[in-house]
Image (cartoon, rainbow, N blue to C red; front, side):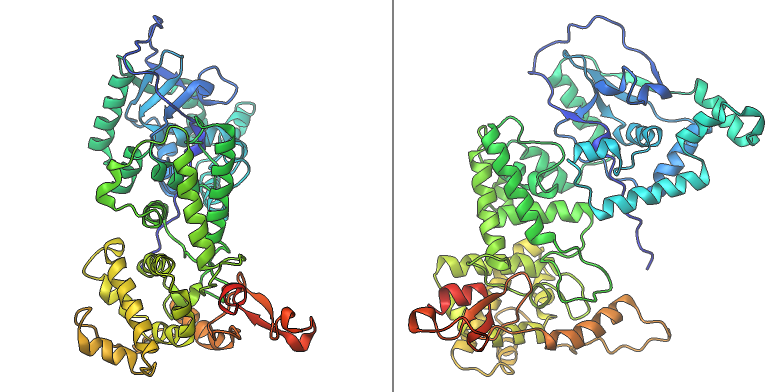
Length: 523
């Protein structure tokens, strides 16, 4: 299977701004220009600094390196480029109604910023992910080798007698080429209508983006946007008080770190894996929105019933709930169960299971609501044996529904395992009984490891990962209280004999445990 090229984030190159109050007609009487020249997109020009996109615009991150390079090459060769549609606001900003990817690609080329240089660094407060840096370098290298950088063309004008014919023709084109413009008239309401009509017809907005657009003033939407960029990037919460802004950014950054770090590398060569594996941008956006909703007890069909959050108070509340839940799953916090991500969220060959994550979130919420953590802790070692040995069962339960909708059914499946273990059923017989009862449909136990033959002499990434996990997981330390697997993010050094009972702080009296087992269950 051919691996998709990573998408390049050009989101920082055209800042977002809110439209003016609806009904406010622009008072600018200057005629709108029909075309902008290439130099108008340089940072020092008078046009580029006033270029904006609507604050509800989806992220400009749908093009990969090849598409950006092909577009710039087409522009240089004078091919027909569709006009960009703008609207001029009363404040003098030029809002992009259609064509943000086209303009952003040219801005990136002209200013040598493919999501990883000066403009982007400032936009993201210097927080640029490794994926974004790698994608930026990929497109920069491709462009350098295939068509040349903008700076190369600038230098070539000083040595016209020494450049090749193709470069000479393109340099000439840059002196006369421009981007055709069309202008939307009317007020902000008209501009917003034009934006949605054009974008839905030309490049339909994904269901997740549409949900985020509709929830842009609601606490779940703002919270999700904050987590997506770890509290950086465009501040959808900028209208809140400074205190609320600071809290939102701090919470979002911590949540992002808790669930997405350390960065997962394939093939897996460490048991120190994140709660959430590698997801595409669209998958990540959907994942975070669903996570916020599940934690805060919001069903998809009821999203629009949420009230807007004009002060940010509910956004902070939603984020705080998400922080506490993430800490409960796996963190260096006294409340942490320290659920090992490799056991709970990955398959034996390292594939990530979103459905398992949603279901574990629902399970933890259930344990908290019913004050039944201790029941889970007492059988945790055997519970982890069952779900790891039968990691193919959850996908079977989820297969006939979406991961979000199936989470409650999978949660009930987990609780059934807990109940059977509590009743004394041997861990090796638990799954046989559940399958026989058919409460969760017609489930089948499959071979633990894929035994299919291969004619290739080269190990696949999945085989390499499976080999590592097979040999590494049995060596992972276990909690000396519950017997469950320990993860490096959530380890406590416990007194075997408690201090209040005379236990000393020496090596003989020290043992590794989960934080929750030490701070709560043991006491």
